[in-house]
View 1: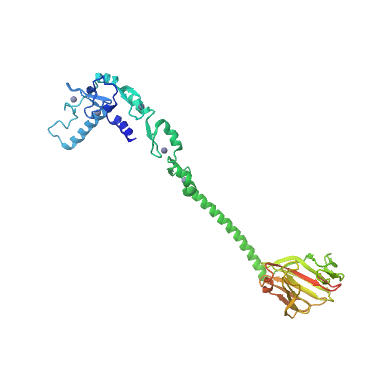
View 2: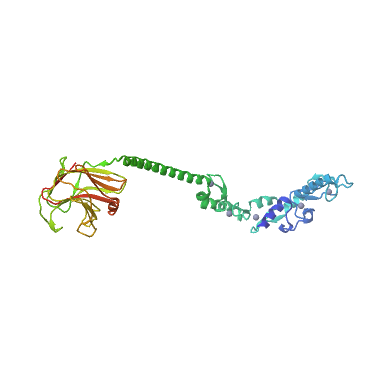
Amino acid sequence: MQQEEEAELMLEQGGIPISQLCNSSVNIDLLQCPICFNILWKPIACGQDRCFSSFCQYCIESWLNQKNAQSTFEEEEETFANESNCPKCKRVFIKTEIPLVKVLLSQIELKCIHSNCTQVIPYADYENHIVNCKERKKQCRGCQQYILQNKLEEHEAQCSQIPVECQKCHKRMPKCDLESKHDKYNCIENLFKVQDQQLENLYTQYLICDDMVNYYEEKIARMMKGDLIALTEYNFFTIFTANYQFTTDNLYIARLVRNSYNYNKQKNDFLHFYVDYYFTTGLEGYEWKCRVIRLRGNLLIGVCSSQLSNSVDFIVNRLGEVKKKEENDNRYHIIRKVNFTFGEGDVIRFQILPFMQCLRITNETRHLTFCFNRNELQEMGDQYFSFFSLEYQGDALQFL
Ligand SMILES: [Zn+2]
Ligand SMILES: [Zn+2]
Ligand SMILES: [Zn+2]
Ligand SMILES: [Zn+2]
Ligand SMILES: [Zn+2]
């Protein structure tokens, strides 16, 4: 490859090597440059009488320039070296042209300098051919390989090393870098975009957090004030009992109508029902009330982990006995005795206090208070139900 470049350079900077000559019918002596010893290229002759030596244009011009440059240092030596002298006759160089040389040159034919080209070219067409020769190779601006010049455009179009400019940040780089990693990882514009996106996401998160903070602040303020959500509408739910009555014309009355034998429980029927609302151990506080309308038998007031028979239950009865039922047990076992009783006509208030994490039950009529405490509520998991169990025919509760 370099050979090719050298050959082209020779054409710009001197003559054509004798080895390129094809027909030898012409006397080559007249056509050789006395400076580069190649075949004259764009010849210029010395016009001095009896000299008429021809040189390549480039050779003679460089020689003369060199002489001029030297003379500025060598200050008027007695020789003629300070003048622009002919290298042959040493006299002042007078530029001329010799028609005979031109005629002779026009008769020679030359081999192309490009390695695979077999064409023989008349001297006059030589430069034109060299530049346009199919076998001429040029260096790819990307991979630096030498490619046939008529294939170069196609090659550069797909050469992965070709330098390209990023349209966003205007940085130049090999095409393969732009495609593989620049856009994704290095382009400043994209990095900014990613940062912008992240900022936007953070801001969104911040807004969400801000909303949540407000929400919880309000809640905490409510809790601190002891503000509870009052239940005023009730839905009741039961699975065990056949003979019961829920009256719901604004008077939410739950009544066991008639005793019968409950085969499931292997005992006399009872009205076991839930306030159909599950309470979570979250931040909400609730309260509701009921009045004991009739109570000849016992009443169990309780909390349970589920509405199925294998739930964990805690209850308090009219004797102030706090009892617990394990998950896979049918019986209640006394765990403590408290100063809490109720009877017919009493109003009982229920309060779920999230701050204290307890269910406080107050007999407003008798001024007695009792709590299912945090540990007991936690044994039932994340949520629990409030339930009541009436055992005696005709006994009833009215929810207020
Ligand atoms: Zn020359
Ligand atoms: Zn001369
Ligand atoms: Zn050629
Ligand atoms: Zn290339
Ligand atoms: Zn970029």
